[in-house]
Amino acid sequence: MLWLTEPSQATQNASTSYSFWGALPGLLWFGLATACLLLLHRQLTALVENLAWRLRTGAAVKLFSLELGATYVAPNVEPKTFETNLEHYTDKNDDRWKQREQYYGPNRRAFLVHKIGPSKHKGQLYDIQLYLVPHKGANLAGIAKVEYYFGKYWGNQIFVSIDRARSFAISTSAYGPFVCTAELFFSDGERVFVSRYVDFEMGGIAANG
Image (cartoon, rainbow, N blue to C red; front, side, top):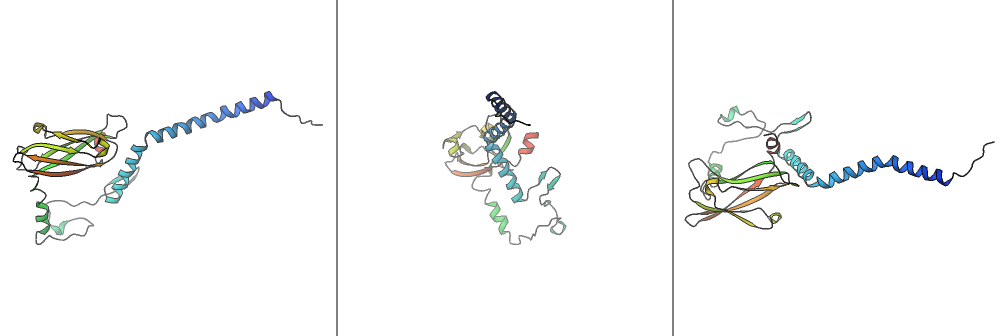
């Protein structure tokens, strides 16, 4: 005959202790994954937004063995020789040419550009340097100073550069793309605003460079 007796308190305690220690590795892994998501939330969000933007704009994206190619238009060729699936037609009246030329005039052929590299600062994704580049035939001699503005994440501050020898360069860090506006002050008293969307599209090259 089989007798069933209520387990002793010691047996119950041992069973509870075994269950806790058995579940501990799973709890630790869950805690580690949660901590990583919280710490890397901004960076992961920026990477996902970057990928989504590249897919929307048709830029080349490679995911493991899958590669989505960007459309390509070669310069200095006859229109009939273009090898592209894009619809295209000739600007016969030069309207677009004239409109495009207006981007050179107000800023006297001085353009705001940027380059990026992996950030050396905790919590940031890339270090960024912004500076002016004169278009061919122009120079920066007529510019006295440049005032940069990055937005409220930089304390709503305006940063002033007078270093013409370094092309009025300024550096910062960010975990996501942003718009930079810069006011150019010319020696003759004229002032003009230019802007730059500081994207992370070259991030892969910057990280491997």
